Amino acid sequence: MSSRQNHSQLTQAIHPVKAAVHERNGAIMSVSPKDHTPPDAAKGQSQTRPSRVSLYNPESVLTDLSMDSTGARLADKAGTCQVHSRRKEKDLNTSEEGISLEERSLRQRNWYDRHRLNSRRPEISDNQRRYLEEEGAYLELPKSTTDILLPIYNMLLDDLIPVLDGAAIFRDYSNGQASIFLLRAVSLIACKFRQAAPFLRICEDGAILDQRHFASILLKSLDVSIKADLEPDRITKVQILALMHLHNDGLSGLDRSSGYLSQAISEAWAISLHVKVPVNSGQERCDFLWWTLRNFDRLNKPVMGAAPFMIDDTDIGVERIAPRKDHYRSQLMAISLSLGDLMKTATRIYKASSTATDDDFDAFPTFSELTTNVCMDGFQRSHRLYLQIWYHVAAMLSCRYSGPESVQYQRRLSSADSVLRIVCLEEPANLPPLPLVPYAMSMSTTVVYRALRDGERAPEEAYKDLGACYDNLVILSRLWTSAKGVARLVRRLQQFTRPSAPPIRTTEGAPCTCDDTHQHANVTRNPISNLNNLQRHGPTQDVTGSSVLPVSSLVQPSEAFLPPDESTDDDGQSGHRAATWFVDGLSYSHFDRAFYDFFDYGMPSLFRDLATWDFLQSDANDDLEVSSLNH
Image (cartoon, rainbow, N blue to C red; front, top):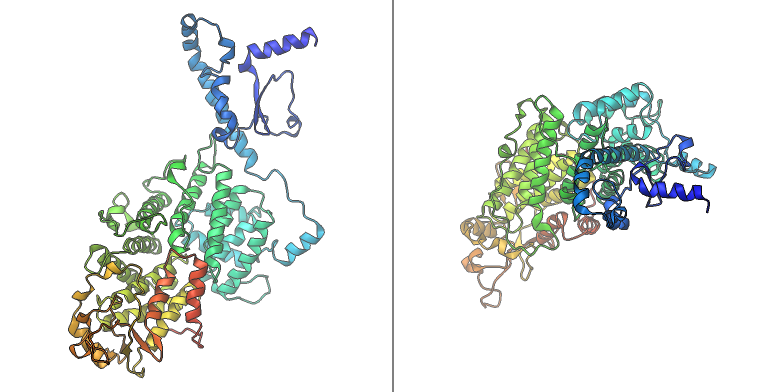
Protein backbone atom coordinates (compact mmCIF):
# COMPACT_ATOMS: atom_id res chain seq x y z
CA MET A 1 0.00 0.00 0.00
CA SER A 2 1.47 3.40 -1.00
CA SER A 3 2.13 6.25 1.42
CA ARG A 4 -0.47 8.38 -0.41
CA GLN A 5 -3.17 5.77 0.27
CA ASN A 6 -2.14 5.55 3.91
CA HIS A 7 -2.33 9.32 4.20
CA SER A 8 -5.81 9.36 2.62
CA GLN A 9 -7.13 6.73 5.03
CA LEU A 10 -5.60 8.53 8.01
CA THR A 11 -7.19 11.83 6.94
CA GLN A 12 -10.57 10.12 6.60
CA ALA A 13 -10.28 8.60 10.09
CA ILE A 14 -9.28 11.90 11.73
CA HIS A 15 -11.98 14.01 9.99
CA PRO A 16 -15.08 11.79 9.86
CA VAL A 17 -17.46 14.77 10.02
CA LYS A 18 -16.32 15.91 6.59
CA ALA A 19 -17.19 12.59 5.04
CA ALA A 20 -20.41 12.06 3.12
CA VAL A 21 -22.68 9.42 4.60
CA HIS A 22 -24.18 6.82 2.30
CA GLU A 23 -26.34 3.82 2.80
CA ARG A 24 -25.73 0.72 0.71
CA ASN A 25 -28.03 -2.27 1.07
CA GLY A 26 -28.88 -1.35 4.66
CA ALA A 27 -25.27 -0.68 5.75
CA ILE A 28 -24.02 2.80 6.66
CA MET A 29 -20.60 3.67 5.14
CA SER A 30 -18.43 6.76 5.57
CA VAL A 31 -16.72 7.81 2.36
CA SER A 32 -14.58 10.83 1.53
CA PRO A 33 -16.27 12.94 -1.15
CA LYS A 34 -12.89 13.59 -2.83
CA ASP A 35 -12.00 9.93 -3.15
CA HIS A 36 -15.36 8.56 -4.24
CA THR A 37 -18.02 9.44 -6.80
CA PRO A 38 -21.39 7.72 -6.29
CA PRO A 39 -22.49 5.69 -9.30
CA ASP A 40 -25.93 7.34 -9.21
CA ALA A 41 -24.54 10.87 -9.36
CA ALA A 42 -24.34 10.83 -13.14
CA LYS A 43 -28.03 10.03 -13.28
CA GLY A 44 -28.95 13.03 -11.16
CA GLN A 45 -30.19 10.88 -8.28
CA SER A 46 -29.73 11.74 -4.65
CA GLN A 47 -26.39 10.87 -3.08
CA THR A 48 -27.86 10.55 0.40
CA ARG A 49 -30.82 8.56 1.62
CA PRO A 50 -31.73 7.45 5.13
CA SER A 51 -32.68 3.95 6.08
CA ARG A 52 -36.44 3.50 5.82
CA VAL A 53 -36.66 1.48 9.03
CA SER A 54 -33.97 3.56 10.77
CA LEU A 55 -33.93 2.59 14.45
CA TYR A 56 -35.27 -0.89 13.68
CA ASN A 57 -32.06 -1.75 11.80
CA PRO A 58 -29.73 -4.07 13.76
CA GLU A 59 -26.91 -1.60 13.08
CA SER A 60 -28.68 1.05 15.14
CA VAL A 61 -27.54 -0.75 18.31
CA LEU A 62 -23.97 0.23 17.45
CA THR A 63 -24.69 3.90 16.74
CA ASP A 64 -23.37 5.19 20.06
CA LEU A 65 -20.12 3.27 19.48
CA SER A 66 -19.51 5.15 16.24
CA MET A 67 -20.62 8.74 16.90
CA ASP A 68 -21.27 10.95 19.88
CA SER A 69 -23.57 13.97 19.95
CA THR A 70 -20.89 16.17 18.33
CA GLY A 71 -20.37 13.84 15.40
CA ALA A 72 -16.88 12.75 16.58
CA ARG A 73 -15.93 9.09 16.78
CA LEU A 74 -15.67 7.79 20.33
CA ALA A 75 -12.78 5.55 19.30
CA ASP A 76 -10.70 8.60 18.36
CA LYS A 77 -11.22 10.03 21.85
CA ALA A 78 -9.85 7.02 23.68
CA GLY A 79 -7.12 8.06 26.14
CA THR A 80 -8.02 11.77 25.92
CA CYS A 81 -8.28 13.69 29.17
CA GLN A 82 -12.00 14.19 29.72
CA VAL A 83 -11.51 17.27 31.96
CA HIS A 84 -9.55 19.33 29.40
CA SER A 85 -11.68 18.26 26.47
CA ARG A 86 -15.01 19.14 28.14
CA ARG A 87 -14.85 22.86 27.27
CA LYS A 88 -14.01 22.11 23.64
CA GLU A 89 -16.93 19.67 23.38
CA LYS A 90 -19.27 22.33 24.81
CA ASP A 91 -18.16 24.86 22.22
CA LEU A 92 -18.74 22.40 19.39
CA ASN A 93 -22.15 21.17 20.55
CA THR A 94 -24.25 23.98 19.09
CA SER A 95 -22.71 24.12 15.62
CA GLU A 96 -22.27 20.38 15.17
CA GLU A 97 -25.81 19.51 16.35
CA GLY A 98 -27.17 22.09 13.93
CA ILE A 99 -25.28 20.48 11.09
CA SER A 100 -26.49 17.04 12.15
CA LEU A 101 -30.16 18.08 12.20
CA GLU A 102 -29.83 19.86 8.89
CA GLU A 103 -28.20 16.83 7.33
CA ARG A 104 -30.84 14.52 8.73
CA SER A 105 -33.62 16.71 7.35
CA LEU A 106 -31.95 16.76 3.96
CA ARG A 107 -31.61 12.99 3.95
CA GLN A 108 -35.28 12.53 4.88
CA ARG A 109 -36.39 14.89 2.16
CA ASN A 110 -34.16 13.25 -0.48
CA TRP A 111 -35.39 9.81 0.52
CA TYR A 112 -39.03 10.89 0.35
CA ASP A 113 -38.62 12.49 -3.08
CA ARG A 114 -36.91 9.40 -4.39
CA HIS A 115 -39.23 6.76 -2.96
CA ARG A 116 -42.52 8.53 -3.54
CA LEU A 117 -42.28 7.38 -7.15
CA ASN A 118 -41.71 3.77 -8.07
CA SER A 119 -38.05 3.38 -8.94
CA ARG A 120 -38.78 0.78 -11.60
CA ARG A 121 -41.55 0.61 -14.13
CA PRO A 122 -43.15 -2.83 -14.38
CA GLU A 123 -41.95 -4.82 -17.35
CA ILE A 124 -45.04 -5.88 -19.27
CA SER A 125 -44.91 -8.33 -22.13
CA ASP A 126 -47.16 -8.07 -25.17
CA ASN A 127 -49.38 -10.88 -23.89
CA GLN A 128 -49.68 -9.24 -20.50
CA ARG A 129 -50.54 -5.91 -22.08
CA ARG A 130 -53.27 -7.48 -24.18
CA TYR A 131 -54.70 -9.11 -21.07
CA LEU A 132 -54.62 -5.82 -19.15
CA GLU A 133 -56.34 -4.04 -22.01
CA GLU A 134 -59.06 -6.69 -22.15
CA GLU A 135 -59.63 -6.36 -18.41
CA GLY A 136 -59.90 -2.58 -18.66
CA ALA A 137 -56.69 -1.70 -16.83
CA TYR A 138 -56.08 1.25 -19.17
CA LEU A 139 -59.73 2.31 -19.33
CA GLU A 140 -60.29 6.05 -19.72
CA LEU A 141 -63.81 7.22 -19.01
CA PRO A 142 -65.40 9.53 -21.58
CA LYS A 143 -65.07 13.23 -20.93
CA SER A 144 -68.84 13.64 -20.69
CA THR A 145 -68.86 11.26 -17.71
CA THR A 146 -65.80 12.59 -15.89
CA ASP A 147 -66.92 16.19 -16.36
CA ILE A 148 -69.95 15.39 -14.20
CA LEU A 149 -68.61 12.89 -11.68
CA LEU A 150 -65.52 14.85 -10.64
CA PRO A 151 -67.43 18.04 -9.68
CA ILE A 152 -70.05 15.93 -7.87
CA TYR A 153 -67.32 14.34 -5.79
CA ASN A 154 -65.66 17.68 -5.06
CA MET A 155 -68.89 19.34 -3.97
CA LEU A 156 -70.40 16.54 -1.89
CA LEU A 157 -67.58 14.32 -0.58
CA ASP A 158 -64.17 15.95 -0.90
CA ASP A 159 -64.25 17.75 2.47
CA LEU A 160 -66.01 14.94 4.33
CA ILE A 161 -63.41 12.31 3.37
CA PRO A 162 -60.27 14.30 2.42
CA VAL A 163 -58.48 11.45 0.67
CA LEU A 164 -57.28 13.88 -1.97
CA ASP A 165 -57.27 17.56 -2.84
CA GLY A 166 -60.29 17.84 -5.10
CA ALA A 167 -59.39 21.27 -6.44
CA ALA A 168 -55.87 20.16 -7.36
CA ILE A 169 -57.19 17.03 -9.08
CA PHE A 170 -59.66 19.12 -11.06
CA ARG A 171 -56.87 21.45 -12.20
CA ASP A 172 -54.73 18.49 -13.24
CA TYR A 173 -57.70 16.99 -15.06
CA SER A 174 -58.37 20.22 -16.97
CA ASN A 175 -54.74 20.21 -18.11
CA GLY A 176 -54.73 16.52 -19.02
CA GLN A 177 -52.28 15.67 -16.24
CA ALA A 178 -54.49 13.75 -13.80
CA SER A 179 -53.95 10.03 -13.22
CA ILE A 180 -56.52 8.03 -15.18
CA PHE A 181 -56.55 5.50 -12.34
CA LEU A 182 -57.33 8.13 -9.72
CA LEU A 183 -60.10 9.60 -11.90
CA ARG A 184 -61.61 6.13 -12.15
CA ALA A 185 -61.43 5.70 -8.36
CA VAL A 186 -63.16 9.04 -7.83
CA SER A 187 -65.85 8.02 -10.34
CA LEU A 188 -66.31 4.73 -8.48
CA ILE A 189 -67.52 6.65 -5.43
CA ALA A 190 -69.25 9.57 -7.16
CA CYS A 191 -71.39 7.32 -9.36
CA LYS A 192 -73.53 6.39 -6.35
CA PHE A 193 -75.02 9.88 -6.13
CA ARG A 194 -78.41 10.12 -7.80
CA GLN A 195 -77.24 13.22 -9.69
CA ALA A 196 -74.73 11.03 -11.52
CA ALA A 197 -77.19 8.40 -12.75
CA PRO A 198 -77.90 9.92 -16.23
CA PHE A 199 -74.20 10.17 -17.12
CA LEU A 200 -72.76 6.73 -16.38
CA ARG A 201 -71.14 5.63 -19.62
CA ILE A 202 -68.01 3.56 -20.11
CA CYS A 203 -67.43 4.82 -23.65
CA GLU A 204 -68.52 8.01 -25.37
CA ASP A 205 -71.31 6.49 -27.46
CA GLY A 206 -72.11 3.67 -25.06
CA ALA A 207 -75.33 2.96 -23.23
CA ILE A 208 -76.10 4.50 -19.86
CA LEU A 209 -75.47 1.89 -17.16
CA ASP A 210 -77.11 1.50 -13.80
CA GLN A 211 -75.02 2.55 -10.83
CA ARG A 212 -74.12 -0.90 -9.51
CA HIS A 213 -73.12 -2.21 -12.96
CA PHE A 214 -71.05 0.89 -13.67
CA ALA A 215 -69.32 0.62 -10.29
CA SER A 216 -68.56 -3.08 -10.74
CA ILE A 217 -66.84 -2.40 -14.08
CA LEU A 218 -64.72 0.36 -12.56
CA LEU A 219 -63.78 -1.74 -9.54
CA LYS A 220 -62.71 -4.67 -11.70
CA SER A 221 -60.55 -2.45 -13.91
CA LEU A 222 -58.99 -0.68 -10.91
CA ASP A 223 -58.21 -3.98 -9.22
CA VAL A 224 -56.29 -5.13 -12.29
CA SER A 225 -54.46 -1.80 -12.55
CA ILE A 226 -53.37 -1.88 -8.91
CA LYS A 227 -52.20 -5.48 -9.06
CA ALA A 228 -50.19 -4.71 -12.18
CA ASP A 229 -48.63 -1.74 -10.33
CA LEU A 230 -49.40 0.65 -13.17
CA GLU A 231 -49.68 3.78 -11.00
CA PRO A 232 -46.15 5.20 -10.52
CA ASP A 233 -46.96 7.73 -7.77
CA ARG A 234 -47.22 5.88 -4.46
CA ILE A 235 -49.29 8.58 -2.75
CA THR A 236 -51.75 8.42 -5.62
CA LYS A 237 -51.79 4.64 -5.21
CA VAL A 238 -52.71 5.05 -1.54
CA GLN A 239 -55.53 7.41 -2.54
CA ILE A 240 -56.85 4.94 -5.10
CA LEU A 241 -56.84 2.04 -2.63
CA ALA A 242 -58.57 4.17 0.00
CA LEU A 243 -61.36 5.03 -2.43
CA MET A 244 -61.67 1.41 -3.56
CA HIS A 245 -62.12 0.47 0.09
CA LEU A 246 -65.34 2.50 0.17
CA HIS A 247 -66.99 0.16 -2.34
CA ASN A 248 -67.98 -3.00 -0.47
CA ASP A 249 -70.71 -4.30 -2.75
CA GLY A 250 -71.36 -8.01 -3.18
CA LEU A 251 -71.21 -11.07 -0.94
CA SER A 252 -67.41 -10.88 -0.70
CA GLY A 253 -67.41 -7.09 -0.67
CA LEU A 254 -66.69 -6.76 3.05
CA ASP A 255 -63.54 -8.87 2.95
CA ARG A 256 -62.36 -7.29 -0.29
CA SER A 257 -62.94 -3.79 1.09
CA SER A 258 -60.92 -4.53 4.23
CA GLY A 259 -58.13 -5.87 2.04
CA TYR A 260 -57.95 -2.64 0.06
CA LEU A 261 -57.75 -0.59 3.25
CA SER A 262 -55.03 -2.85 4.64
CA GLN A 263 -53.02 -2.41 1.44
CA ALA A 264 -53.53 1.37 1.50
CA ILE A 265 -52.27 1.59 5.08
CA SER A 266 -49.30 -0.63 4.25
CA GLU A 267 -48.36 1.59 1.31
CA ALA A 268 -48.72 4.66 3.54
CA TRP A 269 -46.37 3.14 6.12
CA ALA A 270 -43.89 2.29 3.38
CA ILE A 271 -43.49 5.91 2.30
CA SER A 272 -43.53 7.23 5.89
CA LEU A 273 -46.80 9.09 5.43
CA HIS A 274 -47.28 8.92 9.20
CA VAL A 275 -44.24 11.11 9.96
CA LYS A 276 -43.46 14.70 9.12
CA VAL A 277 -41.10 15.16 6.18
CA PRO A 278 -39.03 18.38 6.26
CA VAL A 279 -39.62 20.97 3.55
CA ASN A 280 -42.58 19.04 2.13
CA SER A 281 -44.86 21.39 0.24
CA GLY A 282 -47.62 18.77 0.30
CA GLN A 283 -47.36 18.00 4.03
CA GLU A 284 -50.88 19.19 4.87
CA ARG A 285 -52.38 17.12 2.06
CA CYS A 286 -50.43 14.07 3.26
CA ASP A 287 -51.55 14.66 6.85
CA PHE A 288 -55.20 14.77 5.83
CA LEU A 289 -54.74 11.59 3.83
CA TRP A 290 -53.13 9.77 6.74
CA TRP A 291 -55.77 10.79 9.28
CA THR A 292 -58.49 9.85 6.80
CA LEU A 293 -56.99 6.37 6.61
CA ARG A 294 -57.04 6.28 10.39
CA ASN A 295 -60.74 7.20 10.43
CA PHE A 296 -61.49 4.54 7.81
CA ASP A 297 -59.71 2.06 10.06
CA ARG A 298 -61.90 3.01 13.01
CA LEU A 299 -65.03 2.41 10.93
CA ASN A 300 -63.67 -0.69 9.22
CA LYS A 301 -63.88 -2.81 12.37
CA PRO A 302 -67.67 -2.68 12.81
CA VAL A 303 -68.86 -1.82 9.30
CA MET A 304 -66.71 -4.32 7.41
CA GLY A 305 -66.65 -6.88 10.20
CA ALA A 306 -62.85 -6.72 10.51
CA ALA A 307 -61.53 -7.83 13.89
CA PRO A 308 -58.49 -5.65 14.62
CA PHE A 309 -57.64 -2.00 14.29
CA MET A 310 -54.68 -1.65 11.96
CA ILE A 311 -53.43 1.75 13.17
CA ASP A 312 -52.26 2.55 16.69
CA ASP A 313 -52.30 6.28 17.40
CA THR A 314 -49.07 6.02 19.38
CA ASP A 315 -47.23 5.09 16.17
CA ILE A 316 -48.27 8.29 14.39
CA GLY A 317 -45.64 11.02 14.13
CA VAL A 318 -47.76 13.79 12.60
CA GLU A 319 -49.88 16.06 14.76
CA ARG A 320 -53.62 15.57 14.96
CA ILE A 321 -55.50 18.01 12.80
CA ALA A 322 -57.04 20.71 14.97
CA PRO A 323 -60.05 22.77 13.90
CA ARG A 324 -59.11 26.11 12.44
CA LYS A 325 -61.35 29.11 12.07
CA ASP A 326 -62.78 29.48 8.58
CA HIS A 327 -61.20 26.17 7.55
CA TYR A 328 -64.10 23.82 6.89
CA ARG A 329 -62.03 20.74 6.10
CA SER A 330 -60.07 20.91 9.36
CA GLN A 331 -63.28 21.32 11.36
CA LEU A 332 -64.81 18.25 9.75
CA MET A 333 -61.64 16.27 10.35
CA ALA A 334 -61.44 17.30 14.02
CA ILE A 335 -64.95 15.97 14.68
CA SER A 336 -64.24 12.82 12.68
CA LEU A 337 -61.13 12.15 14.76
CA SER A 338 -63.15 12.49 17.97
CA LEU A 339 -65.75 10.08 16.59
CA GLY A 340 -62.94 7.68 15.69
CA ASP A 341 -61.75 7.80 19.30
CA LEU A 342 -65.30 7.13 20.46
CA MET A 343 -65.64 4.18 18.09
CA LYS A 344 -62.48 2.64 19.51
CA THR A 345 -63.86 2.95 23.04
CA ALA A 346 -67.30 1.62 22.08
CA THR A 347 -65.93 -1.51 20.39
CA ARG A 348 -63.52 -2.41 23.18
CA ILE A 349 -65.95 -5.02 24.53
CA TYR A 350 -65.90 -6.85 21.18
CA LYS A 351 -62.18 -7.66 21.31
CA ALA A 352 -61.40 -11.36 21.15
CA SER A 353 -59.30 -11.09 24.31
CA SER A 354 -61.99 -9.26 26.26
CA THR A 355 -63.20 -11.08 29.37
CA ALA A 356 -65.74 -8.42 30.31
CA THR A 357 -69.31 -9.51 30.85
CA ASP A 358 -70.66 -6.04 31.46
CA ASP A 359 -70.72 -2.93 29.34
CA ASP A 360 -68.60 0.08 30.15
CA PHE A 361 -70.30 2.17 32.81
CA ASP A 362 -68.20 5.26 32.15
CA ALA A 363 -70.11 8.33 31.08
CA PHE A 364 -70.81 8.23 27.35
CA PRO A 365 -70.35 11.69 25.80
CA THR A 366 -73.19 13.36 23.96
CA PHE A 367 -72.79 14.54 20.41
CA SER A 368 -72.89 18.17 21.50
CA GLU A 369 -70.06 17.50 23.95
CA LEU A 370 -67.91 16.10 21.15
CA THR A 371 -68.48 19.17 19.01
CA THR A 372 -68.08 21.93 21.60
CA ASN A 373 -65.01 23.36 19.86
CA VAL A 374 -66.68 23.56 16.46
CA CYS A 375 -69.76 25.46 15.36
CA MET A 376 -71.68 23.15 13.04
CA ASP A 377 -74.25 25.71 11.93
CA GLY A 378 -72.32 26.35 8.74
CA PHE A 379 -71.74 22.67 7.94
CA GLN A 380 -73.16 21.16 4.79
CA ARG A 381 -76.36 19.40 5.82
CA SER A 382 -75.44 15.96 4.49
CA HIS A 383 -72.05 16.16 6.23
CA ARG A 384 -73.62 17.10 9.54
CA LEU A 385 -76.13 14.26 9.33
CA TYR A 386 -73.39 11.79 8.41
CA LEU A 387 -71.42 12.74 11.53
CA GLN A 388 -74.54 12.32 13.64
CA ILE A 389 -75.15 8.87 12.17
CA TRP A 390 -71.54 7.97 12.97
CA TYR A 391 -72.07 9.00 16.58
CA HIS A 392 -75.27 6.97 16.89
CA VAL A 393 -73.57 3.86 15.49
CA ALA A 394 -70.92 4.16 18.21
CA ALA A 395 -73.68 4.59 20.80
CA MET A 396 -75.48 1.45 19.60
CA LEU A 397 -72.27 -0.58 19.64
CA SER A 398 -71.49 0.54 23.20
CA CYS A 399 -74.27 -1.72 24.50
CA ARG A 400 -73.61 -5.44 24.22
CA TYR A 401 -74.55 -7.05 27.53
CA SER A 402 -76.83 -4.62 29.34
CA GLY A 403 -80.49 -5.44 29.88
CA PRO A 404 -83.58 -3.37 29.06
CA GLU A 405 -83.58 -1.33 32.28
CA SER A 406 -79.98 -0.17 31.86
CA VAL A 407 -78.77 3.19 30.62
CA GLN A 408 -76.74 1.48 27.89
CA TYR A 409 -79.78 -0.37 26.53
CA GLN A 410 -81.89 2.76 26.41
CA ARG A 411 -79.04 4.65 24.76
CA ARG A 412 -78.83 2.00 22.07
CA LEU A 413 -82.57 2.12 21.42
CA SER A 414 -82.60 5.92 21.39
CA SER A 415 -79.76 6.02 18.87
CA ALA A 416 -81.54 3.49 16.65
CA ASP A 417 -84.59 5.74 16.66
CA SER A 418 -82.39 8.73 15.82
CA VAL A 419 -80.82 6.98 12.82
CA LEU A 420 -84.25 5.91 11.57
CA ARG A 421 -85.56 9.45 11.97
CA ILE A 422 -82.58 10.97 10.11
CA VAL A 423 -82.84 8.54 7.20
CA CYS A 424 -86.62 8.89 6.93
CA LEU A 425 -86.62 12.68 7.00
CA GLU A 426 -83.62 13.12 4.72
CA GLU A 427 -84.19 10.08 2.47
CA PRO A 428 -81.29 7.72 1.70
CA ALA A 429 -80.53 9.37 -1.64
CA ASN A 430 -79.66 12.66 0.06
CA LEU A 431 -77.08 11.13 2.40
CA PRO A 432 -73.43 10.50 1.49
CA PRO A 433 -73.17 7.16 -0.36
CA LEU A 434 -70.67 5.68 2.09
CA PRO A 435 -70.75 2.22 3.74
CA LEU A 436 -71.59 3.64 7.16
CA VAL A 437 -75.11 4.65 6.08
CA PRO A 438 -76.48 1.19 5.07
CA TYR A 439 -74.71 -0.33 8.08
CA ALA A 440 -76.34 2.18 10.44
CA MET A 441 -79.76 1.51 8.92
CA SER A 442 -79.28 -2.25 9.23
CA MET A 443 -78.05 -1.90 12.80
CA SER A 444 -81.06 0.25 13.70
CA THR A 445 -83.37 -2.40 12.27
CA THR A 446 -81.89 -5.10 14.49
CA VAL A 447 -82.11 -2.85 17.56
CA VAL A 448 -85.80 -2.13 16.89
CA TYR A 449 -86.42 -5.85 16.43
CA ARG A 450 -84.58 -6.55 19.66
CA ALA A 451 -86.73 -4.00 21.51
CA LEU A 452 -89.80 -5.77 20.17
CA ARG A 453 -88.54 -9.15 21.34
CA ASP A 454 -87.64 -7.72 24.75
CA GLY A 455 -91.04 -6.13 25.16
CA GLU A 456 -89.50 -2.67 25.30
CA ARG A 457 -91.63 -1.39 22.44
CA ALA A 458 -95.32 -1.81 21.80
CA PRO A 459 -95.94 -4.26 18.95
CA GLU A 460 -97.90 -1.75 16.88
CA GLU A 461 -95.17 0.89 17.18
CA ALA A 462 -92.35 -1.59 16.59
CA TYR A 463 -94.04 -3.04 13.53
CA LYS A 464 -94.48 0.43 12.06
CA ASP A 465 -90.80 1.20 12.70
CA LEU A 466 -89.74 -2.06 11.07
CA GLY A 467 -91.83 -1.14 8.04
CA ALA A 468 -90.01 2.19 7.78
CA CYS A 469 -86.68 0.37 8.18
CA TYR A 470 -87.65 -1.98 5.37
CA ASP A 471 -88.53 0.86 3.00
CA ASN A 472 -85.19 2.58 3.60
CA LEU A 473 -83.25 -0.67 3.28
CA VAL A 474 -84.92 -1.39 -0.06
CA ILE A 475 -83.78 1.99 -1.39
CA LEU A 476 -80.27 1.46 -0.03
CA SER A 477 -80.11 -2.07 -1.46
CA ARG A 478 -80.14 -0.60 -4.97
CA LEU A 479 -76.57 0.50 -4.26
CA TRP A 480 -75.50 -1.79 -1.41
CA THR A 481 -76.16 -5.52 -1.45
CA SER A 482 -75.28 -5.57 2.26
CA ALA A 483 -78.59 -3.79 2.91
CA LYS A 484 -80.52 -6.27 0.79
CA GLY A 485 -79.98 -9.12 3.26
CA VAL A 486 -81.52 -7.28 6.20
CA ALA A 487 -84.32 -5.98 3.96
CA ARG A 488 -85.21 -9.55 3.01
CA LEU A 489 -85.18 -10.49 6.65
CA VAL A 490 -87.66 -7.76 7.54
CA ARG A 491 -89.85 -8.68 4.58
CA ARG A 492 -90.05 -12.28 5.70
CA LEU A 493 -90.90 -11.05 9.16
CA GLN A 494 -93.78 -9.06 7.69
CA GLN A 495 -94.95 -12.09 5.72
CA PHE A 496 -95.22 -14.14 8.89
CA THR A 497 -97.21 -11.42 10.61
CA ARG A 498 -99.61 -10.57 7.80
CA PRO A 499 -103.35 -10.69 8.60
CA SER A 500 -103.82 -13.95 6.69
CA ALA A 501 -101.00 -15.74 8.52
CA PRO A 502 -101.95 -18.99 10.31
CA PRO A 503 -102.45 -18.87 14.09
CA ILE A 504 -99.20 -18.65 16.03
CA ARG A 505 -98.38 -21.22 18.69
CA THR A 506 -95.38 -22.00 20.89
CA THR A 507 -93.06 -24.97 20.88
CA GLU A 508 -91.08 -26.58 23.65
CA GLY A 509 -87.36 -26.88 24.08
CA ALA A 510 -86.15 -24.03 21.88
CA PRO A 511 -82.73 -22.85 23.13
CA CYS A 512 -81.81 -19.29 23.92
CA THR A 513 -80.42 -17.57 20.84
CA CYS A 514 -79.14 -14.36 22.36
CA ASP A 515 -75.48 -13.50 22.81
CA ASP A 516 -75.54 -13.46 26.61
CA THR A 517 -78.40 -14.68 28.78
CA HIS A 518 -77.87 -12.31 31.68
CA GLN A 519 -78.63 -9.29 29.54
CA HIS A 520 -82.30 -10.29 29.77
CA ALA A 521 -82.31 -10.81 33.51
CA ASN A 522 -84.87 -8.07 34.01
CA VAL A 523 -87.11 -8.95 31.09
CA THR A 524 -89.79 -10.36 33.42
CA ARG A 525 -90.79 -6.82 34.24
CA ASN A 526 -92.58 -6.63 30.85
CA PRO A 527 -96.37 -6.36 31.07
CA ILE A 528 -97.55 -9.93 31.44
CA SER A 529 -101.10 -9.11 30.49
CA ASN A 530 -99.99 -7.85 27.09
CA LEU A 531 -98.02 -11.02 26.38
CA ASN A 532 -100.82 -13.24 27.66
CA ASN A 533 -103.22 -11.47 25.34
CA LEU A 534 -100.87 -12.05 22.41
CA GLN A 535 -100.49 -15.72 23.29
CA ARG A 536 -104.24 -16.26 23.61
CA HIS A 537 -105.33 -14.34 20.55
CA GLY A 538 -102.35 -14.60 18.19
CA PRO A 539 -101.19 -11.65 16.12
CA THR A 540 -102.90 -8.35 16.78
CA GLN A 541 -103.58 -5.69 14.20
CA ASP A 542 -102.63 -2.03 14.24
CA VAL A 543 -104.64 0.85 12.85
CA THR A 544 -103.48 0.04 9.32
CA GLY A 545 -104.82 -3.48 9.53
CA SER A 546 -101.35 -5.03 9.41
CA SER A 547 -100.64 -8.01 11.62
CA VAL A 548 -98.25 -7.42 14.53
CA LEU A 549 -95.56 -9.83 15.70
CA PRO A 550 -96.17 -11.31 19.17
CA VAL A 551 -93.45 -10.64 21.72
CA SER A 552 -91.06 -13.32 22.93
CA SER A 553 -88.69 -13.14 25.88
CA LEU A 554 -85.76 -14.82 24.11
CA VAL A 555 -84.70 -16.32 27.45
CA GLN A 556 -85.20 -19.60 29.21
CA PRO A 557 -88.97 -19.94 29.67
CA SER A 558 -90.51 -18.61 32.82
CA GLU A 559 -93.92 -19.24 34.33
CA ALA A 560 -94.37 -15.51 34.61
CA PHE A 561 -94.65 -15.33 30.83
CA LEU A 562 -97.28 -18.03 30.47
CA PRO A 563 -100.99 -17.75 31.13
CA PRO A 564 -102.22 -19.72 34.15
CA ASP A 565 -103.97 -22.27 31.98
CA GLU A 566 -100.77 -22.97 30.02
CA SER A 567 -98.42 -23.50 32.95
CA THR A 568 -98.69 -27.27 32.56
CA ASP A 569 -97.89 -29.44 29.59
CA ASP A 570 -100.19 -31.88 27.81
CA ASP A 571 -99.47 -34.62 30.38
CA GLY A 572 -100.72 -32.46 33.21
CA GLN A 573 -97.25 -32.09 34.69
CA SER A 574 -95.78 -28.74 35.63
CA GLY A 575 -93.34 -27.46 33.03
CA HIS A 576 -91.88 -24.46 31.28
CA ARG A 577 -92.28 -23.46 27.68
CA ALA A 578 -89.93 -21.34 25.68
CA ALA A 579 -91.62 -18.29 24.30
CA THR A 580 -90.48 -19.02 20.75
CA TRP A 581 -93.02 -18.68 17.95
CA PHE A 582 -93.28 -20.43 14.63
CA VAL A 583 -95.58 -20.59 11.65
CA ASP A 584 -95.73 -23.50 9.22
CA GLY A 585 -92.73 -25.14 10.88
CA LEU A 586 -90.48 -22.06 10.82
CA SER A 587 -89.72 -20.67 14.27
CA TYR A 588 -89.15 -17.02 15.04
CA SER A 589 -85.88 -18.16 16.58
CA HIS A 590 -84.67 -18.33 12.98
CA PHE A 591 -85.16 -14.58 12.77
CA ASP A 592 -83.30 -14.14 16.04
CA ARG A 593 -80.34 -16.10 14.77
CA ALA A 594 -80.36 -14.40 11.38
CA PHE A 595 -80.45 -10.92 12.90
CA TYR A 596 -77.71 -11.92 15.31
CA ASP A 597 -75.51 -13.43 12.58
CA PHE A 598 -75.41 -10.15 10.69
CA PHE A 599 -73.65 -8.48 13.62
CA ASP A 600 -71.73 -11.29 15.32
CA TYR A 601 -68.16 -10.00 15.48
CA GLY A 602 -66.93 -13.35 16.77
CA MET A 603 -67.46 -14.86 13.32
CA PRO A 604 -65.62 -13.97 10.10
CA SER A 605 -67.83 -11.98 7.76
CA LEU A 606 -67.66 -14.72 5.13
CA PHE A 607 -69.39 -17.21 7.44
CA ARG A 608 -71.86 -14.60 8.63
CA ASP A 609 -72.87 -13.94 5.05
CA LEU A 610 -73.30 -17.59 4.10
CA ALA A 611 -75.17 -18.59 7.25
CA THR A 612 -77.61 -15.74 6.90
CA TRP A 613 -78.08 -15.99 3.16
CA ASP A 614 -78.90 -19.69 3.42
CA PHE A 615 -81.89 -18.67 5.49
CA LEU A 616 -82.84 -15.73 3.30
CA GLN A 617 -82.52 -17.51 -0.04
CA SER A 618 -85.36 -19.87 0.87
CA ASP A 619 -87.67 -17.07 -0.21
CA ALA A 620 -88.36 -17.56 -3.91
CA ASN A 621 -89.29 -13.93 -4.52
CA ASP A 622 -86.03 -11.96 -4.62
CA ASP A 623 -87.50 -8.69 -5.83
CA LEU A 624 -87.67 -6.07 -3.13
CA GLU A 625 -90.29 -3.36 -3.31
CA VAL A 626 -91.07 -0.49 -1.02
CA SER A 627 -93.96 -1.51 1.19
CA SER A 628 -97.20 0.42 1.46
CA LEU A 629 -97.25 0.05 5.22
CA ASN A 630 -96.46 3.67 5.97
CA HIS A 631 -98.20 5.22 2.98
